[in-house]
Length: 294
Image 1 (spheres, rainbow, N blue to C red):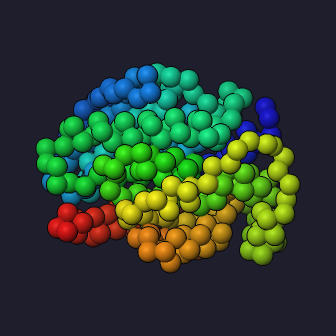
Image 2: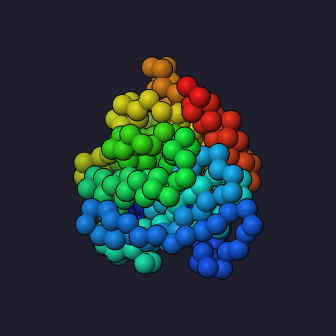
């Protein structure tokens, strides 16, 4: 396996939430439905969760890895009044297409694959809207780690996306991300012996080990005018949080309605912790309905 593909595997996964089939989920406060939809010539399959009292809706976008639909996480969101569409990633589970990723020896962060995944997220957005009983519910995208490159592209492609939420999503180029991950080398004690200035110097000066056109999420983010929330862990060794926050601040300075929240004691798996997830839910409930009234 090529080294850069190994490092790109080390991104946020929601396997800890469990991947129950919808038929095994029975709740009185929401209903589920399996769906199929077309994206870029293939059929993707997923599940929709519709609460009895819906305050917002969103599509869940995967991090890296061979990820299936995130039904347990979707159930939790639905219990909190958020309608969700979650789907098996392209080429994984019951979805068609060809999966690109480290497990099969291919590069999953080249521009062509990221754009393809963005088309999938956009198609999922259109599918979820078909199932909403009221058009006054605003719909967004929520994603994890590697989705930080996919979601801005999808939101730029689809004007129906009205907000974005990212857990541990780097605001750096794909090549900068590689430099950081090679530097930390998966060392859980990295921040005990390295400083933020060490990281900045390394990202700025380390020569790239692999040559491919980088994707910079700021290109799409600079074109969007929708609210965005990023949630970070201060001990993250997979995403360069300090640099990402600095770049969000720079986008905010241009008038972009972006926000971030730092949880100093957490690492990369912010979506596996109660506090960041609850913060995201309250942000969606508090901020998004106000947009409907405008």
